[in-house]
Image (cartoon, rainbow, N blue to C red; front, side, top):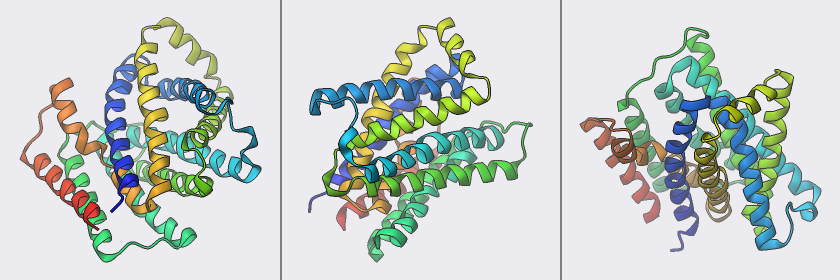
Length: 298
């Protein structure tokens, strides 16, 4: 069978796993909010250059109003607002519990795809999705928990987490609509990124944080190196691969495989950050890989 969509989804997870290390390096210097604002600008520049190299234009102006609306909404909801909710969830719940909330995104994606595209998973595929998500959740709960903040309540954190998972799910479904008729994932991703830039910087300007973001980057120019690499491997390469995956397989399967970074991050964290993990994390990884194998066998 042709598993090109599934392979693209797995490559997305691998790409985002490496990207998270680079973003961590940058976040330690300037903070996650500033990193998020700068990464979308760098990613948009890279995507425009790729558009120019492959298609002869910076942005797909002639893609059609409908396609622009689908991708722009996907970028605004999935990239921008979804990430804002995720960072707030990190603050309220801590990293571990926030990532556990994000593991709901594939289930929400599958539900939305069923409602809007009539996509249904077979019994074996649903079992593979549930096994994979169980393994991912197991791995997340075995990682070291960063403490929640005292500035917001756990209930607020849960709501932010649900908002982040819903944002990602809605973003996937909207992107699937925009990718109809084999539209270029690179061009589609550039529209999404442009929308994310507009939303994030409009929010920064409204909050009076735009100048602060620029000044922070000027004070730490070396951070640009980490951010440039992270922007290319994540929002450019990883996100484009995720759109390719959505184009060539079902939303529920693609979003499940895209949710694998917590599993792939175990060896990376051990090698780069010298983090330790126990037998439970290893078993969770094995369960997740078993679920992935089941998806590839169907």
